[in-house]
Image 1: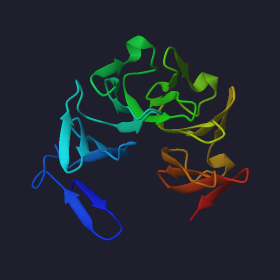
Image 2: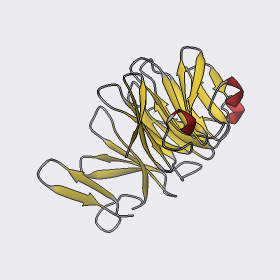
Image 3: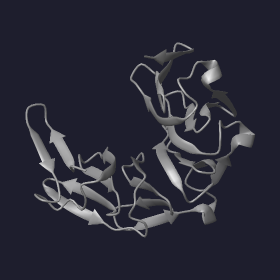
Image 4: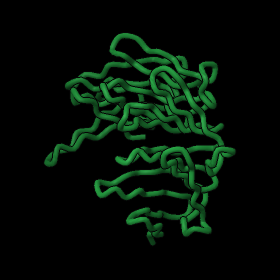
Length: 219
């Protein structure tokens, strides 16, 4: 890994372990909070945030970070193979399978417009509303229980990218799309939403896009 590069539109600045206090050059997650602080997740070195030109390091019980997201008040949520961790500005709290999550192995995390936190795990998708956790599995309509990516669009539809397609929760029911429906591949690895409301689905064998109620393979 080469660390983190900041581009301001004119110049580039790179932070790595040789020229800064960034804890690792191998980064797995990145987010910018409301105070313009940059948060990074690393491979084996926990979480760090950049304030001005100084790095503040955070060590967790599991320092291998799979994903990172900021909630509606700007608190970072971190996904690991030992559950999720959230920082309130003073201490880190832990949310795990023992609290109701589908699994401790969390692959993806996202924050919905309504503030709920969604987790993609190796045993289904879980959602946390601040008090209760609800879990969805393939028996509920998920493409599979191995959820590798998860996003929520402006219409509050939940998109879950899994090992056997992508599933969309519109209200209370999941609908799954696979290669048979035109998806580039069933092995979904990543998801993204654009400003027009399109959902982009990255797979092991190409890219697909949902827009205008149609599924299109991008070649």
